[in-house]
Image (cartoon, rainbow, N blue to C red; front, side):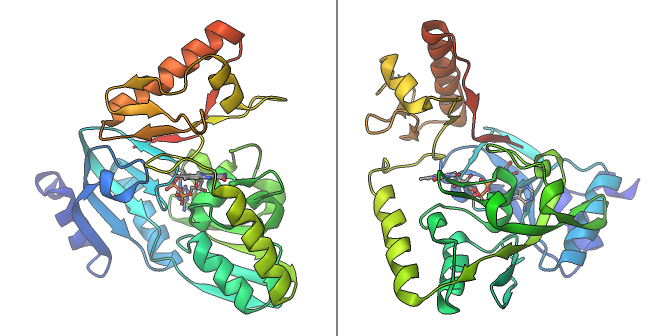
Length: 298
Ligand SMILES: Cc1cc2nc3c(=O)[nH]c(=O)nc-3n(C[C@H](O)[C@H](O)[C@H](O)COP(=O)(O)OP(=O)(O)OC[C@H]3O[C@@H](n4cnc5c(N)ncnc54)[C@H](O)[C@@H]3O)c2cc1C
């Protein structure tokens, strides 16, 4: 087989001459946690059809691959990944029909909110300050107490094995930090529903949510490491177990918010080992098994 003798980036280039791609992708440079190894290649499809063709090829050729948005909720493995990182940042279409917005998977939360505000579309302000892409936000059902992506999503344009699907909200299996898109179905874009608002209300709301986030720890993290168990917060449980400031190598439990694991020059193995230690200690001391919120890739 000819492909077997060529490196992955070259095979991709031969099969998709117009596709934007890079060789030797660094996970540390493309994730908020700032650690992890490298991948053989990364690919940036710029249209839904191109993404679908790429995904079909990766699947047919059995090429290992993973998906990446803005990298705000992932822990990439250390070492070398002989596969392709599919990045969605070039799927950047954004348009509105009334208060209904179509956003490509690669549109960032900041761009989405500015676009909506310019058109006096409100109802999305609670996402202010969450580091996300539309694709990652839908996949993770990101949000805050008051609003999650599941609340504003009407339909999702998705792809698997070369097929394109328009999936209605009710079939997205949204729940706490979960959705149907975590099993290999790629989000390519989504129709989101805002509501008619005015400039002053949008600015006030956005400011309120932004201010509330000011208390979050600074530094490299994946946001909250663990999902809140029913009726409790993971941060309070971790703090009650005396785990603030616990360290493994270059990873440390924040002393500001105990559900944040900070990378202070460590490896993904350090972060992973610290997350395991926290989970084990909380389970031992409280009987509650915390669920990781972040995703391990590849
Ligand atoms: C400082 C900080 C604060 C945060 N605050 C919040 C918060 O308030 N609320 C909250 O919910 N989260 C928060 N997070 C976590 C993170 O912002 C969200 O989970 C966000 O939605 C992740 O989006 P992303 O584009 O970065 O996805 P990534 O981190 O790149 O990916 C997350 C997962 O989705 C998959 N994925 C990405 N794009 C696609 C796609 N197009 N199709 C299919 N799968 C895809 C990835 O493979 C991975 O499994 C915070 C993170 C940080 C660092």
